[in-house]
Image (cartoon, rainbow, N blue to C red; front, side, top):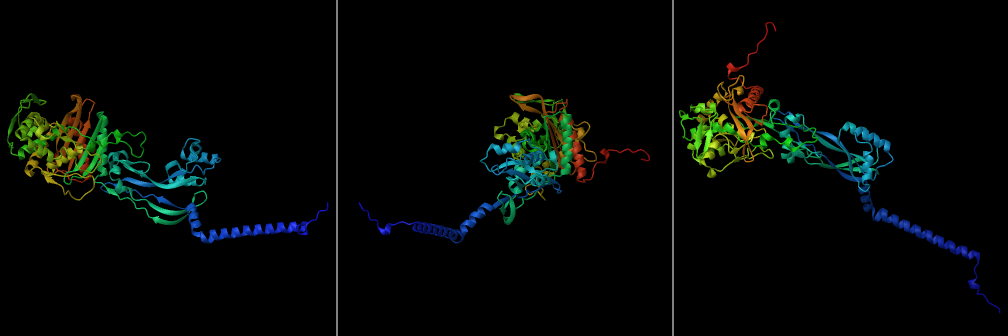
Length: 575
């Protein structure tokens, strides 16, 4: 059989090569067209989108810490200041785990356990942030920066420093590691002190390191400074004397307040035990509680001058009245007792000998509403209003619930509670000729909230009676102030416990003012549970009052007004 082949279907080697070449050319041209189209898309049509994406990877915003405001005393002495520091953090996903030598060097400089950084890297490789160290000094941070480790970053922060240390710790308080106030005025005035953080735009390299500042978006606003009424010189001497007494008498705690008698400004407020806010390791809440402003106690006999003044001002007793005490007074089914039978006492003798019987008789002569009204005006049962966080209200039972024995016990300081600050404030009504002052821990020019409680004549008369308390045969001879006249009142108060008052457990209190004729300062001292054999306020707290008052008056350059009790300095001939 003969087969015929179509000449049009005959294949030759030349034809096959030509077809393949055309296919290759077409393929190359198509690829070039795709590349040109993609380039056009990237560089023309979607240019802004890509630029934005690039910026997102290399341009970022970062926060700028704001400087926290200073806290100063009334003379400008710094009590809390912020210093620049740096915190070191890392992105574990960017860290090179082979850089063991460099990590070891960093751990040594930061005083970290060996292998700590490697542990942080291995802990979670998915996270992008972990602190290595906080609040590192700038000098040390600069040394660490020279290691140039990938994934390790530095951030500027501020660290709070307290130059006065434990002397003013209870007032000032402290901040946490993020510079947020945690106690005292650091917490109470957080909004004023903290400032407003700023922000800036920066360019980072492939390892997220900042290589250039682009622009400031928002400047940080520094916090405002806080100027206290505290005089750090008086604060220091008050702290020193209270600490000595606290240790000497092996007390549970102690508090002391110094007030300006004319303005109500708090010049000092100290406590024991104290703490150092610069090193807060193992710090307990009980240590940083400001007892002078937040803790309360029954004031005992320190309120007796108010009872005498109230009875005189109300006309319920007369200046020349005499009181037959007999050492005991029956009030209903209860008995009021004196330490001794003082016999017949005049008003001065009532305060000088601190007779519970006599002041109880005065209290029973006054209507409950009137008596309660005087205590209420003096600030008992309401916060003193210093602005300190957690300030105590104290307590004062409503007069409608009083029985006769309640009136009697209230007259010698049982049945109500007060803080050392509240008691000092009440004494301004005697110190400033009957005018009660509001209190302030911020420096101010005048007290616009003052109010009259007693007549000037009555306040002066009671102050003169209180001067005799510091005489040789009074209850507080140890409270006399070298070079100055002084007046005051002791208080030795049994502490309340479950089911009644606890035996051999006392608050030792002294409240006084000086100079007596024209008082400039008021000092209240409270020592909780002295346990070294003595517990009377005239023995335990009165000497602290004496030393603090004498030193404070000299700091303020108040002229001595009583030459006969000034110390005599003896010098040898030729010395």
